[in-house]
Image 1 (tube, rainbow, N blue to C red):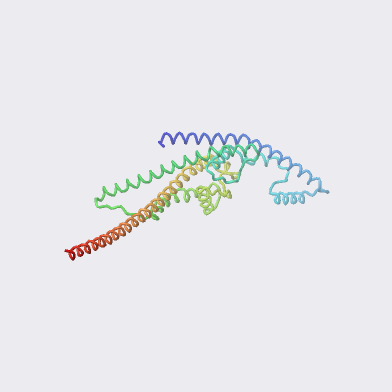
Image 2 (image 1 turned 120 degrees about the vertical axis):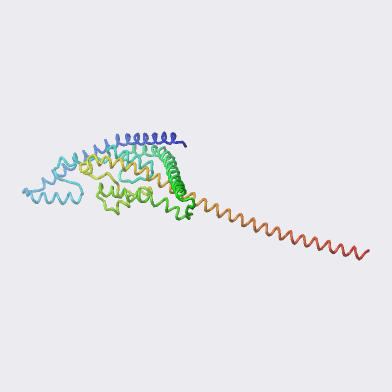
Length: 318
């Protein structure tokens, strides 16, 4: 695949993600709005019912009981009309785009999912197209990273040869080659981004490293998912928008790098198997040639002995 073809595929992939995000946002955001209104109405009804139960009215006891019920239900039962208005929507457009990307990349966190039949059926059809396109895109992205690293490695050897004509490159073993390609990616795509996750998500650094690994390996447990904090946008402002864009960029490049490493592992394993097969075939051919030569030698000795006996018989007759 040429660069133009890959860029065209990338443009189609991004457009496809925006298409999916638009559909999921249109239906799920509307359903979430309805559920929020129903939840608010249930909250007010429960609050009225509880207030009618206090006779005579004891404000301190009432507030204490309402707080206990709110804590137990993990939802407020106070007559607070601003709670659901200030609480950010789960199905905003960015989260819809992020969900589309997790579907196509097969990470599937599970923290959000379609809530109606249409959304679930659409997700199935959407994934049938998105997953193969995602696989092709990241396969060639992995090849690009592989050729880039190989080119840099060759340039380094040329530079060393220009400095020293007697320079001989080190011959790394299979395990050393894996570490050579894998370690920079661990630092670049796990340990460094984990610092940003810790800052914006208020996670411990170990949790951030855990999240990065679970995501890039497409395990995707969903126990920790970024950008879903309730006050992140108000707290970080425009930097939070940059952080959201960074997550998508990190996701794409990190998965591409992982595909590259897996490709190197597959090639290395194939080369090992081929080398063993060649050794086995050569050994079999060598042993077969030796057996054949020994058989020829035995036959030659046998034939020669026959001729010798015939010669002796002829000599006795004459």
